Image (cartoon, rainbow, N blue to C red; front, side, top):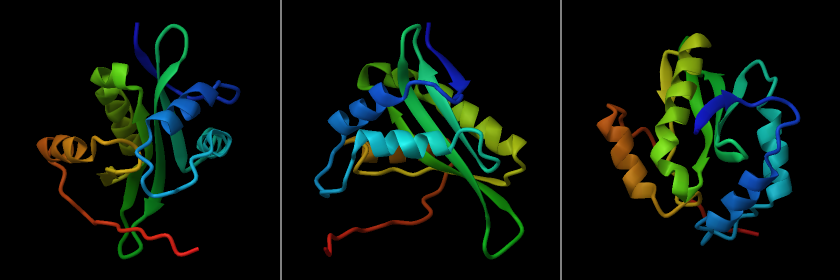
Length: 150
């Protein structure tokens, strides 16, 4: 059985953090230390303006979606922002369970907008993810570029 739950303190995130590093498309030379990822993911738990959702099978965490809420700096709206979204390749057919849980949470938090990101770092599925977002009625918002300088 595959299900989504809101993460709780003490949940073992080490396996999914290691898997993220293994499946990462890291042509950017960005640090993807699993211990630091676990620390950042844990910071989303029991946080008034953040949440971490996990996709689980009966044994382990097989996917994550971290969310943060921020206020539109130009207006009054709150925006629910996807901070992380990673699912093991063999469980990607269940990815939308995380998306729906996160979107529901953002609405509950009073968000007017729900924003997701497509990173080339997370996987080689960037273009496919962009198409999925567009099929769900989302619009392209911004584009980022990166260059190592130190």
